[in-house]
Amino acid sequence: MGKVIVSFTMSLDGFIAGPNISPEDAMGEGGEQLHDWLFDGSSEIDRDMAREMPANVGAVILGKRTFDLGLPHWEDTPFPAPSFVLTHEKREPLKMKSSAFTFINGGVESAVQQAKAAASEKDIIVMGANVAQQLLRAKLADEIVLQLAPVLLGQGTRLFDGIGDETIELKNTRTIQSPLVTHLRYQIL
Image (cartoon, rainbow, N blue to C red; front, side, top):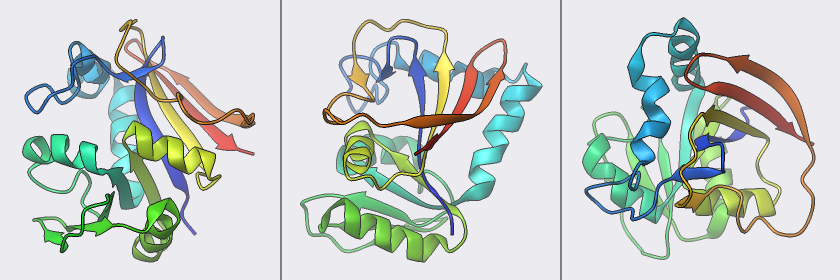
C-alpha cells in the first residue's frame, strides 16, 4: 500500500508560499524562489529528487484554493494521476489530459479512502497547507517530505500552523544536501 505524503518546499522560517497569494501570483510574493531548486538544473541531486516523486505518485489530494490557483498554471492535474479536491462545492469530475479532478465533499477521511483506491500501491501526495494540516490532525499522513530552501520569507502561508496542540513524533529517514536546498524525509510515528 502506498503512503500518504505531505510534501512541500518550505523556507527556513516555515513558509510554503509568500504573502499576497493571487491568481497571477499563485506562490505569493517571493514564493517562486522556493522552487528555484526545481528549475535551476545545475544540481544532479536536485534533478534526481525532482524525478523521484512523480514516478511514485498514484493520486493527489489537494484543497479547493490550491486547485483554483494552480489549474491555470498546470493546465492539467498537478501530477499525471487522479486528483481529489477537498471542497464544500458539489461538482462533477473534471477530466484533464493526464487524469481527472474529483471533488470530495466528505472530508479528509473520504478523500484518503478514494485516493488510496485510485493510487493502488503508489503514494498519495498532499498539496495545500490547509489539507496537510487536516491530515496531520486526523493522523492520516504517513510521511512528511520537505525541501528546505535557504531563504527567509518573513510572511506568507505556514505549513505547520493549525495542526493542534498534540505532539507529532517523527523519525528522520533521509537528509540529502544540495547547493540549493536540503531534502528531508520523515516518517510519522
